[in-house]
Amino acid sequence: MYAAETLSEDEDNGTMPDNVASLSEAVVGHRIVSVETGGTGRWGNDRTVITLDNGKRVVLEGTDDCCAYTELTSFLLHADKVDHIITGVGTTNGFNTWHIFADMGDVLELSVGWSSGNPFYYGYGFKISVSDLSD
Image (cartoon, rainbow, N blue to C red; front, side, top):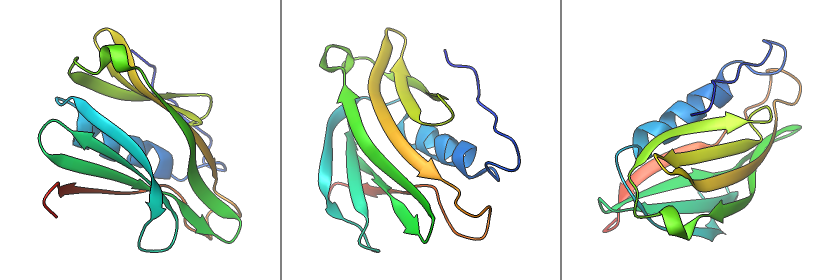
C-alpha cells in the first residue's frame, strides 16, 4: 500500500527501516484493541502502548541521546477500521508519518519526529518491545 522509503546513508543508517520492520512484525495479522500514551519507559522517555487482540502490548518508547532523538508526537486511530486485521506498516514523508494499515486503509497513523543527530554517533529510533498483558 505504501512504497518503501529510502533515505541517503548520510540521513539514516538503517535504523528507521529496522524500526518499521520490528513494528510490522509485532502487529501484522492482529487487530488493535487500544492505543494509549503516557508514562515513561525505562530511560524516562515517553511511551505509547498499542494493545492487540492476541493479548500483547507493543510499546514504542521514544529515545533522546544528545542531538539525536525519536518521538511519537501524535497519533490518529481510525476507530471505524479497528475490526480489520492489520496487513502492513508503511511510512511517508521521510519516516515522519507511519501508517498501520488494513485492507480498508489506515487503522492507525503515527506522527513521528526524529533526527539522527550527528550521524551516527548518537542513538535514535524507537525502542520497541512486546509483552503479554499479564506482564
